[in-house]
Length: 145
Image (cartoon, rainbow, N blue to C red; front, side):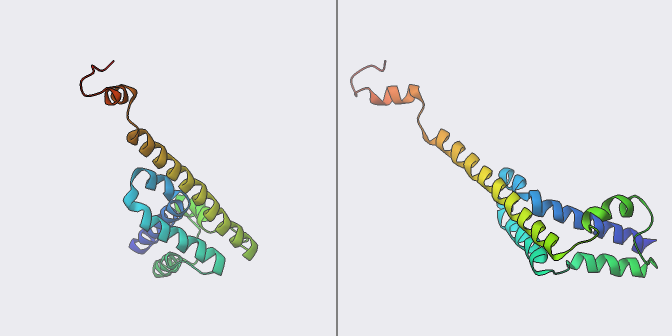
């Protein structure tokens, strides 16, 4: 029972990692310090798909399921609803290339949005307001407008 719960926890962690790989740039928009972590995760996720690798979380989950005496993914909610998301059936090399491209495109678009948002916020902070620029343009002995 404990190994099955641990295997389910690894599966949930795997799903969370996949979601972070695909959509982590949205978190980076709120917390810039996550940038290096997300870039590493996105590179890992794209690399796994491009080179046909198997994530260590998959091995950990299958090992725990074996310890639990399970031969496959039959059973409860986690296996029935989440496994097809993490392990799509009929995963071909072409589909893996498409998934890697999707990771790169989605993250490229999200980082472009984050970058533009950051520039827009910086430019509004850097520009003086109209009131302060009117005051700044007045001479030292002239009253401001």
